[in-house]
Length: 330
Image (tube, rainbow, N blue to C red; front, side):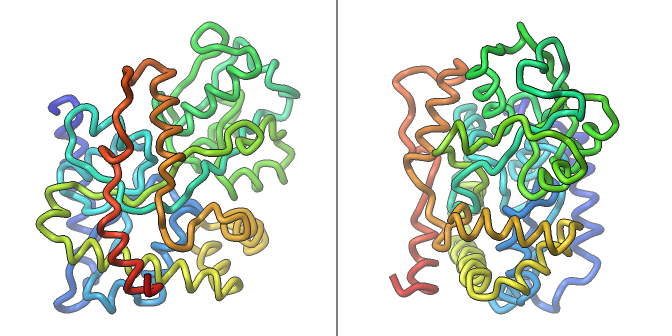
């Protein structure tokens, strides 16, 4: 586990959290920190629960801690600097296989909503041969999916292209505009911004991969076992936010636009993709088949060996079931 935790990064995160969480906590409220990688539509339920006071009604003062990569978010969760993380399922699976005590407890995204977007002179996926692509991390979920897209088009790593880590989806957009990389994976709605600026969409992930569990709500196993009521309360607030989002499109879009820093028009297009297409599940359920697909993909990358571990090793649905009973009566 020593290779998982990097002391200097943890210290930096702890300092950020102390400053951020001490700024304006509600009197007597439990301080809860949630790690996110950049800002994107996947985190809308958390933002809505903050804006609408759903967390506060459960006695929680919830703050989001924005980091640049999955690795840093993982370090924060494992060190206890954040109580919840939103890293993709592949990250959780890798950590658990290394001995980390982490569980996926709910889903924020049942599909990875990405486009592979290239520089303006790039006309097709074949044009990426011999170039350098920008990724969030060399082994992140988005990178795994990008490799699958390129492999389907005859391009293998590292034979045909290089990769460099440039950070979150916003950081990747900056790298694309600066011309330092040939193409990047951009999550919806950041991809809309790039496409509207004239950058070509080389591939839409939905064309290649239908089932792939992505953004989750994750929790350290020890903390969850010691604080089961807090886990359920947190998930209850998120599910209430999900229901509110489905019933209040316009104000939900406005919250997304404000939090991400994009136009209402782009946020509204993202609402169509995430909500209308049920990418963001109303009940927070984690689809077993989607997690299984992630496990199989990691196996194809030779990061997992057969027989593959069961989905139950990584997912604990018990907290979510209680939250679903409270919100939906089932």
